[in-house]
Length: 259
Image (cartoon, rainbow, N blue to C red):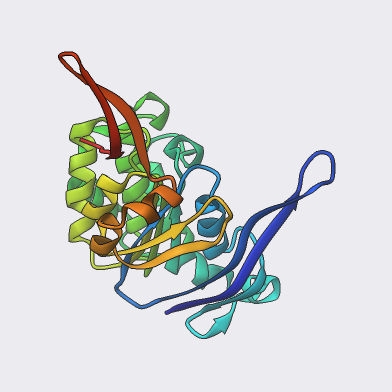
């Protein structure tokens, strides 16, 4: 479904210095795969998701359904691509802009010419248990409610590829648990970024790890990754702190947990 080869991305800071964000990224994503994108803040996770969503163009090659994604291709195939590839940014507030929750869910349906807009809005509102909020402004919702509205609006248009950037960053533990369970039920190709290993193993079986040098450190099954402490240390996905047991003090590495 997706093939990325030798992908690199740089930008200029305010002093016109070239800042490398991604370097020689190559991976293949098959239809139906659920991939967890792991890495510390600044490793390039968000940038890679934006490239896969066509918001940024990078050096190298990005093939979507064997078609090379370029500025010209995106212009010629914009409506189809935007319907098939959706992106939930880290802060749902940045993507909610309509007067009411109903309008948020209906927006994409109208843009892509669905006939049964009202029925679909109510179906997805019921799915996410937000029917009572349909007349409410998104500005007045909690972080968890906003996440539900955003997901409902994205999934309502029946996308083929879901990208999510740190989807639990603004959620409390109960809502995080709900989201994990819900995403597990979806039959959709997805790439979900997080720096939380404990959460990552709940969301998929394949992990792609970006390191501080903005390259891929690991691409494979998540279970062996969790057993490789040296790799986890290199990726800075584990932390170390002291423990006190009566008069004894010791330290060891821990996996960051969402519980």
